[in-house]
Amino acid sequence: MAARTFRHSVQAVLSVQRAWRTFPLRALVPNAEGVDERKPTGGYRRMASAAGKPNLDFDDYRRCYKNKSLAELIRALVLFRLCSSDLLVNNSLQILTGARLCCRGFQGSHSRERPEVTQNGIRPLLGVPLEETLGEQSRDNSEYDNNLQTIRHCITFATELEDKFPMVHLKLTALLPAEICWTLSKLYPTATQSPAFVEVLAGVLHGRQQLRVDGLSDEDTKVLNDGLVRITSMCKLAEEVGVIIMVDAEYTYLNPALNAMSLAMMLAYNATRPLIFYTYQNYLKAAYSNLECDIDFARTHGVCFGAKLVRGAYINTERKLAGSRGYPDPVHATPGETTEMYSKSMDKMMDMIVKHPGKFATIIASHNEETTQRGLDRMEALGMTYDDGSVFFGQVFGMCEHVTAALGNCERGCLVFNALPYGSVEETLAYLSRRAVENKEALKGTRRDRRMMWQAVKDRITLF
Ligand SMILES: Cc1cc2nc3c(=O)[nH]c(=O)nc-3n(C[C@H](O)[C@H](O)[C@H](O)COP(=O)(O)OP(=O)(O)OC[C@H]3O[C@@H](n4cnc5c(N)ncnc54)[C@H](O)[C@@H]3O)c2cc1C
Image 1 (cartoon, rainbow, N blue to C red):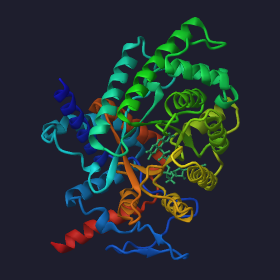
Image 2 (image 1 turned 180 degrees about the horizontal axis):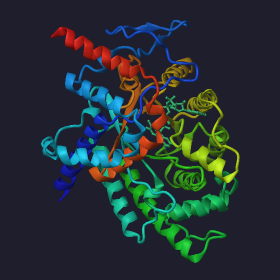
Image 3 (image 1 turned 60 degrees about the horizontal axis):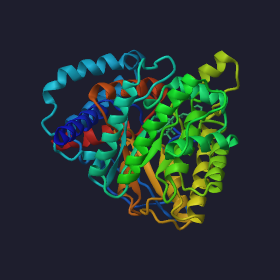
Image 4 (image 1 turned 120 degrees about the horizontal axis):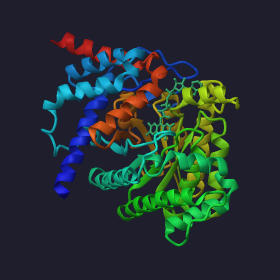
């Protein structure tokens, strides 16, 4: 049974890897200041910034694509092109499902192969592609219970792939209804201003307390309690096997509850190390103040703190909702402001890591060159250690491989992770399709990696 599960898991990851590789959701989009338009020159070069510090080499297409065949490069280029079509992206689930049926004959032959993402110094960050949004509530608990089983398998599998810093990221709406998160978010819009609420949640997660939440009906209390029991099961396993859990941030109408539950998880499981991370979406105007409040909260309660720093994936929905419901847009007006807040959050986390060694950790989850370089420079300026597990870098597998490659090739030995969905192929395709629709605009941008891929293809064709 265990062997079958393992085989199934590897197959799923490999299938998903193929899906990712053949369906890159986004790639480099010009940052606020515009991308560096240097022509790819190829070959490994150690680059120097104005200050004389070694810079990441984002142009090294030969190293970046050295493990890719010509066919894979051409396929990726074709798919980049297809992804710029609204029609195709909007119907991506049907297309991917169809493509999978056509390709079924190719699957399953490498079931014990170590996924490529774990080679070449790039580490896996397994993501469970299960989530729920309002209106999708499951009629019974079995779906959430099944999701819990998938998450538990994923946690165990993470330990088989990565021995030093195994980690997974997931959405709490896989374990309890989005509906209850929405209700809680309305009741407690700022977790740190309701410490008693977070402490009650933590007490339940510890198994020391009965759940009682002011303003919640008996029925909702039971639903929440069931969800907390599942979260406890997940956290206990993660603690036992030492797997970091990164809780994803979702839509702003659910985030206050996700934030409160993540803080409660930190109170219950971050006593000795940052095992639980919460996500801060820096496209939100409130991101930095939330981060500061949460850090203070963790310090007041004497626990460790982990932060996943992202720009954010739901910009169009957030703006549409704010417009249609008449509340102020929660998202920064410009990408430049988002970048500024990202930098501020990164600085804050790094300062805390330096001041309180072992108590704080962060992952710079970004494909943005400027942000990545800035993070590395900041580490250098603060004299930080690159491989002690306090700062990680993360990109989605198959997206902006040149950023991952530049980090992987960097001589400073930083810890680079690629997010890789884990689960059945059906679940994963649905997840990929949602991400594609959400990141539609980004897919159309000018991309350095597309240019670099062309360069690599031309090089190889010339060699023939
Ligand atoms: C490991 C990992 C985990 C992640 N987890 C989460 C998560 O939990 N929750 C979540 O929401 N996302 C998550 N993401 C997704 C992440 O937020 C996206 O990668 C992000 O949207 C892209 O930002 P970037 O820093 O990679 O790239 P960039 O290329 O710099 O930015 C992408 C786009 O955002 C646009 N943009 C940003 N701010 C604004 C603005 N104010 N106005 C207009 N446009 C703007 C830019 O113009 C650009 O088109 C995760 C990503 C990774 C790699």
